[in-house]
Length: 187
Image 1 (cartoon, one colour):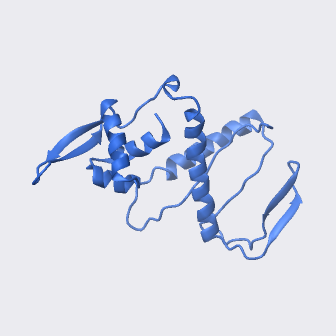
Image 2: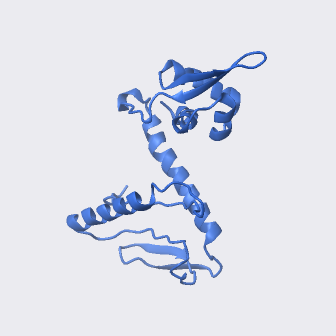
Image 3: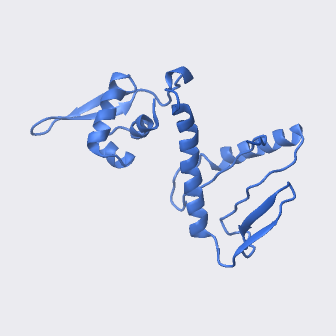
């Protein structure tokens, strides 16, 4: 499994699609998607669920054969595991940064100051946003006990559970979110 195969599989995890509708949703050329769909069908991940008759060649409609697939790590080619981990994170990070830049008031300059955790902190010198401003960002380190770290993890999980799975609905807006905690490791 590769990131390209995952991108090709994505539309079919969300519903039934022709090659054309899936290509639009995946933002792939139809010919590229056709290549991947053939491979996904042979692998048993996607199936034809309907054939729509029309003048000329009928149009197959595809869907995923399950809502979730577990891929053993040894079935993932060397280097692809890192590509999955870093590629997805990079896309989420880039989306988050673009969203912050588009929404935040960045007009005063940069600050460079001592970081209480060691090193130097660099950031934008922004006016303190009103609490209702829907942009918040903090990157850094914290000194925590194992119990503190476990509690922070539980709180992050609770926030993701509460807000991360809400469906698109009238009056809602899509927000980019990045949350996490990990023990700090020097390179």
